[in-house]
Length: 95
Ligand code: SF4
Ligand code: SF4
Image (cartoon, rainbow, N blue to C red; front, side):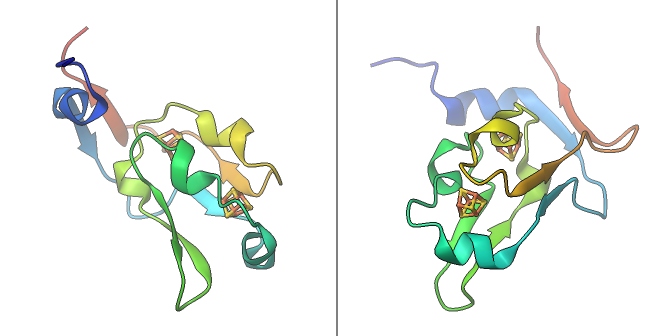
């Protein structure tokens, strides 16, 4: 078994959270109509989760490791993505 899985890699990074999300869902209706909810699967940090009761995609932006996948992987281009503002976001401890 590999000892290089993502959950272990996540211990090698440090976050400084902004109080404002750098990831914004553009249209909640688009998520409602999205059958595949791809963002619930492609994000390595599980930032996006479909909240069935509220019928919205929740965004745990403080867990984002800034890999950039969601800029291109949402089939409806429904995620607004910018880098966290200066001094916030991720710091890699190694490498
Ligand atoms: S993949 Fe895009 S459209 Fe679908 S639920 Fe996620 S953010 Fe919404
Ligand atoms: S940039 Fe990467 S880690 Fe951050 S929310 Fe998008 S897919 Fe997840």
